[in-house]
Amino acid sequence: MNQDEPPVLQAPPDFASLPDRLARAIALAGPIPVSQFMAAANQHYYATRDPLGTAGDFVTAPEISQMFGELIGLWCADGWDRAGRPDAAWVELGPGRGTLAADARRAMARAGFEPPLHLVETSPTLRAAQAGRLPDAAWHDTVDTLPDDRPLLVVANEFFDALPIRQLVRRAGGWHERLVACQDTLFLPIAGKPVPDAVIPAALREAAPGAILEVSPAAVGVMRSLAARIARQGGALLVIDYGYEGPAIGETLQAVRGHAAANPFDAPGENDLSTHVDLATLAAAAQGAGAVAWGPIAQRDLLGALGIDPRTAALARRHPDRADALLADRRRLMDDMGTLFRALAVASPGWPAPAGFGE
Ligand code: SAH
Image (cartoon, rainbow, N blue to C red):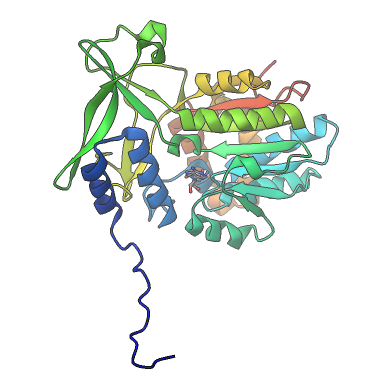
């Protein structure tokens, strides 16, 4: 080799920030759909930090109290037991720090259920946090690679709310796709091309100008493939989210940073973007894929039926110094979050009726 030759230069890694890359993409090819903006922003956001907890951007139910994950674990173990204790796998979608999974696993083991854990998680940072608590778990990028030879017990807490949505905006002449444009460094939503009326549910077509409709093909896609597997393989899925029964008019896209609201179109990749979840549309998608759906019911009704009160009392007896804190945690789960957050259950035909959902 000729020593005088300059070393081969590696192509430099793409150091451009996400806002720069989005601005460049928009300058080259025009404004992008809200769904594309939200997908890129959240992918970057979750890949680059652990957002959970008081020091982070937001707090979730499993981070408030161990009782949440324990009761969800009991829900899984109860269905598994009444289904005849099959050789099943346990799955969590978007497990965050792995707190719910660790608490659920402990409660399930006490009930004699010790399934292998499969975690669907795209963030390398959060995968590392999960591996610290659940070193024996298996990780997946999507639901498509989950085991296909056994029943699945699946939990998704505050997962669907992070998946990208499309926004459709009503103008005088009809409905338009909402796009994100970029002026200098400012991202802003604009009305894009008209969409055919057939895209809009008939009852909502005549909404007033300015009305916004959100739909999530990504969430429906995940639900469809998971429900089809559950229908085929057996098992059940529990979804818990800040939810409503849509489709309905109204913008729910929100940004949170350091526990405060932010503009969803500012600083893409630095705020948590989430939406309220249309649980009725997810239930219909599950039924369309051959599964059975229950609910949605309020989180407080689910946790009440699963025994949060006796659990709070038992923990308070064992740790009298923490009795007040336990009651405060219970209040946050049951009162502050209790009716805004709702649970939807999906199961294979023939799976026992899920605990807490009535008949
Ligand atoms: N369930 C946890 C974390 C909620 S935050 C809790 O209740 O505390 C959302 C979680 O979903 C994070 O773990 C995030 O990395 C993950 N996530 C977001 N989008 C995802 C996607 N498209 N595929 C897989 N995981 C995703």
